[in-house]
Amino acid sequence: MTVGTRPANPLKPPARVKIPRQHPHEQPAAARAANFDEVSHGLDAQHALMEASRCLECRDPACTRGCPVGVDIRGFIQHLLVKDYAGAAARIRESNALPAICGRVCPQESQCEATCTIGRKFAPVAIGLLERFVADWDAEQGPIAPPPRPPALGLRVAVVGSGPAGLTCAADLARLGYGVTVFEALHAAGGVLRYGIPEFRLPKTILDLELERVRALGVEIRTNVLVGRTASLDELFAEWGFDAVFLATGAGTPTFLGIPGEGLCGVYSANEFLTRVNLMGAASFPLHDTPVKIGREVAVIGGGNTALDAVRTARRLGAERTFLVYRRSRAEMPGRLEEIRHAEDEGVEVRLLTNPVRIVGDDEGWVRGLECQRMELGEPDESGRRRPLACAGSEFLLPVQTVIEAIGQRPNPIIQATTRGLAVGRGGVVSVDDAQRTNRAGVFAGGDLSRGGATVILAMRDGRRAAAAIHEYLQGRATTPQAMEVQS
Ligand SMILES: Cc1cc2nc3c(=O)[nH]c(=O)nc-3n(C[C@H](O)[C@H](O)[C@H](O)COP(=O)(O)OP(=O)(O)OC[C@H]3O[C@@H](n4cnc5c(N)ncnc54)[C@H](O)[C@@H]3O)c2cc1C
Ligand code: SF4
Image (cartoon, rainbow, N blue to C red; front, side):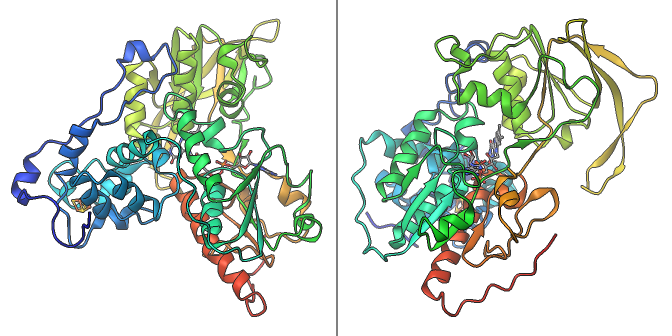
């Protein structure tokens, strides 16, 4: 079925804008707070077609400009409108290697949907839900036929880290004919998609299917290889025979508040807590070896997606009361609105303008409470957000037995520490130019490693840019200078 400049939808625009935005079915809040099954069921075919018919099929689709990887959104919606689901899936995959994941976790409300033309007066087209519908339909069609392989170019690229940045770069390079090996330090691939984002938001079967598709392109994924220890970056070139390297090791090192009591039993970083549950199967201990101990009352410190995932996981592990403690107001919370709503519906108590000052323990070294002070908002700080100021004498104790800190992460430091002369910026991020090139010839970097913590889609955009730059570098190696200044 061919679609293109002619509208695929017979309805006139005034009729399209009268159709209300469609909403997915969700597990009821009370039920889902006690299980790890996916919260949202997505749209069925009838509602997906209804939602697609709201699209104005704009001549100049603003939605695509809002998408960091430039998905042809109008194009895939036009395929959807004529029920050419395979065509819709192919159109998305031209620029997005992980659509079933992006359809679930991307902040569409601040990207493609924020720029959608219809959104100026009405609710924007639910682009994320449509992307998810198409990707899930595609997955249901059974095992994928391996795509035709391009002629091998005889050059090998190592991708370090199997998160969205690494997988996207690997997929793009394999499509060009490079031999690509992804090295992953953990025993399972996927990065944060595997060990951070919980099953109830991103089922691991979805991730496994997307990984299968990347493998089907000819990409080799080798787990249990810690670059910087198993082999250094220099050895990847000199001894393992790679012609270029893309570093995408993410930002998996947690930061802490530095308040008294952080050494008590019952204090976790969100990273450790979520890894225990998502990667190591702690929710079904002793069926799996790794336990996780959770109090009757749990406080999670932070206001981003990581904090929300941790607090909702604690609830599912049986905590009777769960508090999300955030020192600014709701307007400054970086977590997705939909996830905040989901958390509150599940019974999470959000304590805004509340700043933790001390974790209180008992004589045996276990957490017994979180001492907090109330805050008010002052003038904007360097981040542009209003600075939280402590209200004198407002201290109070939140009685909890578990405290989880989710206040941010830094890049994993091993490669920076074991590679001489690799330019590193503030907070340990690897410095790159706008083509993801580091100061070392043939070494590229991206995702959270060079951003210090961002989003899945921005990591994917870096992966795409790096693949293009690696291609350019390897095709013209003799003539390509890399003249980036070393920053320190
Ligand atoms: C709990 C949580 C929830 C989130 N929710 C969302 C969300 O809803 N939407 C969204 O857009 N973003 C979300 N994010 C952010 C998003 O997941 C990240 O920005 C994204 O995963 C970064 O991708 P990456 O490929 O750069 O790194 P990562 O996904 O971190 O992957 C890096 C991989 O490299 C491996 N590695 C590290 N060091 C080495 C080494 N030396 N050798 C070999 N391998 C190594 C790591 O084990 C890891 O698997 C969330 C983050 C967290 C922590
Ligand atoms: S901007 Fe919105 S209405 Fe226009 S093509 Fe994109 S999704 Fe459709």
